[in-house]
Image (cartoon, one colour):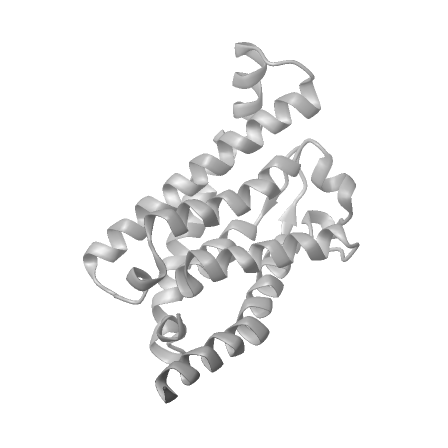
Length: 196
C-alpha cells in the first residue's frame, strides 16, 4: 500500500515541478531564433529533450503547457511573439505539430519502456523522434500551404517544402543528436526516467 502511495506522490511531484520546468525550457529554446519565413529556432531540441527525459505522455503535457503559455500572451514563440494569431497563422501548423511529435513518441514507446535504457530502446527512440518530426513537417507544411498559399497543388506543396522543411532537416537532426547526448548525461545525475 505504501508503495502505491509513493508512486502517486512521485507522479504529483513531476506534474507540479518537472513538467512545467520543461515547458519553460521549450519556451527558452523557442526564443533563440534566426528570422525567416519559418524561423530557425532551438525549439525542437527542447521538445526532443522533454520526450527523451520525461517520456511521451509527460513530454507532450510540457509541449501543451508551452503552447498554452504562448496562446495566453506570454512571448514564448519564436521572435518573442505570442497570441492565438501566431497559432492560426502560416507557421502555426508546425507549433501544433509539436503535439503530434509527442503523440507519435508515446505510441511507439510506452512509458514503461522509456525506463529501460538499452540499445534496443535507443533505436526505438531514434525511430520515434524521426517519425514524429516527419509528422510535424507534414502537418505543418499542409497548414502552411493552406494558410499562406491558399490552395493545394503539387507546385505549392513543393514550394512550401523548399521553404519550410528542406532548410531545417540537417539542423533538426543535429538538434536531435544534441538532445540524445544531453539526455544521456542528465540521466546520470537526475534520473528523471525512474519517476515515470
